[in-house]
Image 1 (cartoon, rainbow, N blue to C red):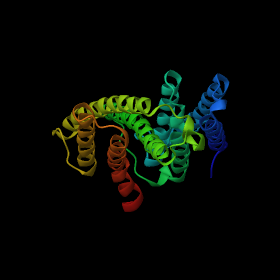
Image 2: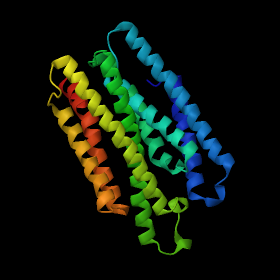
Image 3: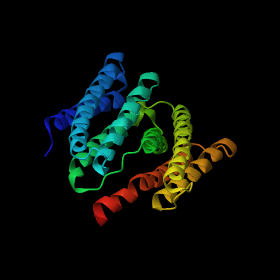
Image 4: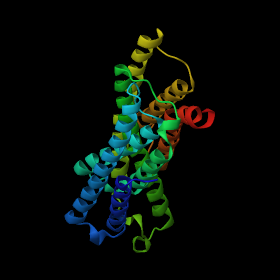
Length: 276
């Protein structure tokens, strides 16, 4: 059952999404007041979401103080951090359009976090080094999630530009920034996310060395994470040396993110929901 805080958060996110849709599809609605309203309502949802997650984690930790996050907690936390990152980036750059992909995903993450009952699934052992590793992983995931959302919008925008050459006939996402600006922001997010992912791998090596005596434990998570890192290397190298752009770069970004998503949550979903 959803709590009052969950309902308040969902309602805030849904309201922000509705206003954002009006803002994005109608150029006449591009006002500072509407932009501020979207950010404020989203922040309100973040506050409700944060309190709701804190209450659930605190109650679980009171019963099992030597544990950190269950899968449900992790999904909700990642959704929350991605939304926080979206708001912070949108305060500095014209990236509100990312909310068209981020806000629905956040609502799904909040619901999934509530649906997966932490009392019936194993949790991650509490360890200081692992906490740093997890924090870096969440930051990397958040930045790369924003890049994924940007790549989806680029694919949609490019398809619209080809299908509807007449500017007067275009609807929906007509008010997105210029495609070149969208690509520039995409690769800025990718470079930041790649840096955070590299630091995550480095911290993971230190944690494994301390716990198991070897730098890498080759399981599904490790293999998929390394494959993701190599995929982003190819993507950024292709941009630097082969001048990849537009739909090609966006599609490759979507593929790399899908691999990252599989490596980040896949093993835990199998272990905690299927096997358990």
